[in-house]
Amino acid sequence: MISWTDVYHVLSATVPLYVAMILAYISVKRLKLFTPDQCSGINKFVAKIAIPLLSFKVISRTDPYHMSLKLIIADSIQKLSTLIVLAIISKLSSKGNLGWIITGFPLATLPNTLIVGIPLLKGMYGEEAAILLSQIVGLQSIIWYNLLLFLYEFRAAEEVSTNSPLKTTEELEDPHEVQPKEGHSKPKATSITKTRTILLTVGKKLLWNIKLPEIIEKSISILSDGGLGMAMFSLGLFMASQTSIIACGTRLAALAMGTRFLIGPALMAIPSLAIGSRGKLLKIAILQAALPQGIVPFVFAKEYSLHPNILSTAVILGLLVALPIALAYYFLLEL
Image 1: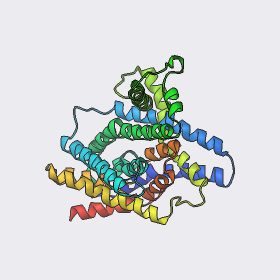
Image 2: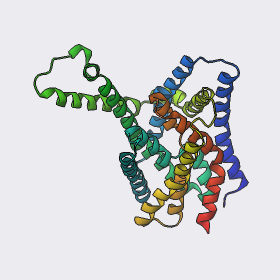
Image 3: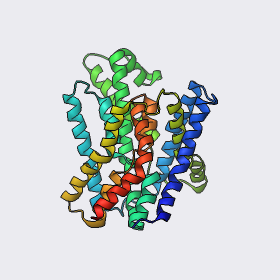
Image 4: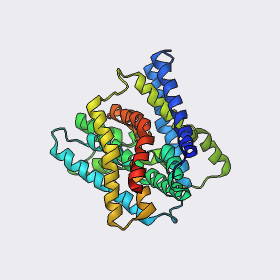
């Protein structure tokens, strides 16, 4: 049973994040300390330096040989099935495009396990829950953030290709090695070059499986340790630039909350039950899927200018209601 001490630990993990967000909001909205260009530069630092280094740090501490196979399989099925469902809905919808798939994917499948989940579920189910959630964090950083980045880069390449095919081909190639193409080889070569460029870009942003000396590891830590705080600061800057805190409107906000706290756990419960997860493992799997939206997808959305208003609203409202919703799921699962 979760105690008031455990609740305090959750608050001690989340309140400092709100302090960073509110400070950024006041800095722009009231004090006018940052210009739009400076805000953009801060978000770029978070997206290209702080968050990748934080992800690297998490991944380097993940042991892939001691993971709960059932949890990992259920988590993978949840995320893949979400992508398939989103692709089908997008295809049938009049607004169907890759952008809505990219936005919907983190809303349903990428929980904020690092900030809220580990202290909260550790209080509910003990050290085992913390270990299992660490595995989710590691897998999320290794696979799903990479996939999300790939989709962002692929969409960005497709937009440029549509607007200016000739310019795209020249930009994707090494400017010192631009060669004229002949006959029918040009489309194929362009496609290969584009894919290679996307993969290289994603690889530069999220790296793993590299053992570094202590002096380099500490150099990474000094930047990565502030990653979450800087991400929340960037969120506060974005909020200040909007006319309303609920930047996407009440309808989309309600849809985002429903996706996060209802559809996400349901999509996790189905494969978990199907592969035989029971007891504490099943409860932890469902509860971690009911955690609020992670901050990292918002940083990516802001960097690529793809519906950051929806993801910012999901993060803000999600953190506000995280504790009562998690407790509601906890009591329901204990019935």
